[in-house]
Image (cartoon, rainbow, N blue to C red; front, side):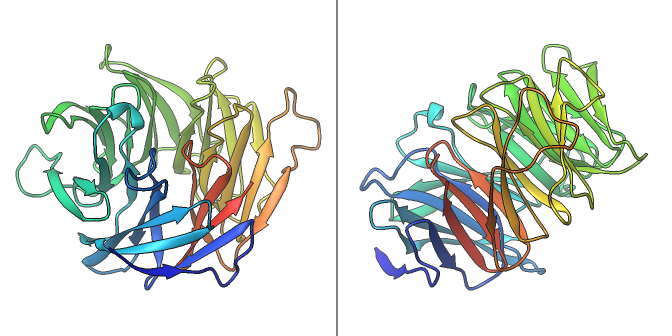
Length: 340
């Protein structure tokens, strides 16, 4: 049952704003529309600095440009979820699955507007009850039975979610691992507080390839995005830095571009789902910038091709293949959809 419709107070054809009862951080857009209508589901995770947090699933209707809430698609979540993702369309399930990370990796089944039911709670600790917090995860869209998680305990864990078991666990870095991204079916990359980007191949678990290290020693790398339209390229961000670093895995150690037009720290990055040369970044300067990467960067750097301003620091950003014409950002207690 839809119990209300949230209309944007900044409503226009290019901006739709949804206001949550609590601060927002994690956010995900479903890869397929709802079966009962063509609404796109968006999952929103609260950021409350205590144990009890929430995940709400709302629906975006691109026809009426409205966001609808669903009383039955709201659940309690232990601690703020560090990331949310809906199952890739390649999973071919009748119902959406939603994954969340925090204390554990959790999977939920979303049954249209009727209910959301827990499927698995997956603990990556080999020593019993205690589990080091998970900082992020990524769902493999080529082999969607695989989810890779990363943790402050320096490990990356690859899960087989069909069986609910660990496929493999690697000590990936020297310090906390902050983000992970799949490139191919058996190849993933991760970034860490040790300042490195490393690529791993599940067919050769003893080795990894370092393709970038922070120019300042021990400067953590916080975010990683692999370009799904052109797997030669990935992007990363440094802690307390206004830069987005673009890497070409064929030319390790030296960035092919550095995007430096943010006025303060970058918090989130997302490659365009339909173009290999466009990327969006958002940060503490309340700006979401869209960049087109030139074939050759000029001497004065690269300027963004477009800019959107929010009312406060932007914590999260999603650019989904299911809604390629819209970018979703989260700031304060608001989720905003921006037409691009």
